[in-house]
View 1 (cartoon, rainbow, N blue to C red):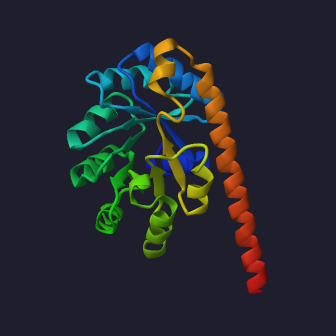
View 2 (view 1 turned 60 degrees about the horizontal axis):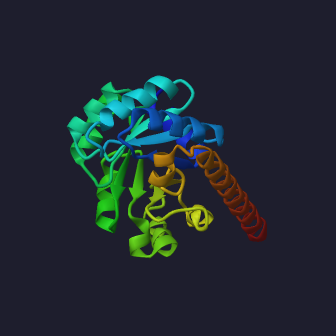
Length: 229
């Protein structure tokens, strides 16, 4: 699958659930629970020391039924290792031109982290497929995203950091093409006790919230076009 198709699928789903654990079995179970909730996309954090091993396990088990990406990638070497471990897309917490270049080399979609207008502009110009606005809650949330969208209308934004069920619709309506969530779906306490069913429930609720927000946005856009005529 090419990077364009991968990004199209991510945007279509609208949610990128992140899993952060050092336990390969737990990660595989968590990914399956997320898929059962109707979201066939998952990001595996490389923050744990054995993150590549975890990524490899999830990609091996679910790579044919889900898009499996690597998160917390900070440099070109991380991209290379993630690609070899089976990652289908890359997510970075901050901007690294070397990481973007390496992702292009491997033909992987990359969502580059940025926060300030300068970082957004540089990340977008670098050829990153989308800008991961992170942590978006720290700079005004949806109001900040709306402001950036006004200045960079050609940039696809993924809202991440403090996004959950209560406000995900607001971020979609503010212009995010997708949201990134972590503990809002796969929290460490639930993983520790093996309560994976809750991940399915949370995923379904978030998926429905994103769907409803998009429907309202489309309806509003249609009304605006009609009024303009």
